[in-house]
Image (cartoon, rainbow, N blue to C red; front, side, top):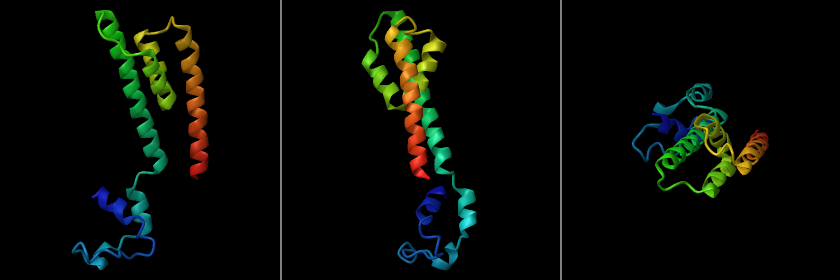
Length: 133
């Protein structure tokens, strides 16, 4: 149902669905008021926050996995991979993972680099969100 709402959202403004007859649906049946559609859809900002939190949760789990592998003396995640994930808006997850799992906390590059990347991430996200409005 949500898929249909996303497909129809660009055509609802004038309350006509140009491809309604092609898919076997009568265009009179799909008359949805714009305010009803807005109520049913998740705002792009909220969707972006959700994706940001899921992405950072994955990087936190990556830090936990690396700590687990370090304790067992097995294959590890490269530090540059962790920094690359932190650079690509995953710094919050890496930082929380550092604190929660007590991992990489003695490395000066992680102590200083991850908080700096976190600030850079947030500044870039604010810049993107301002341009989006």
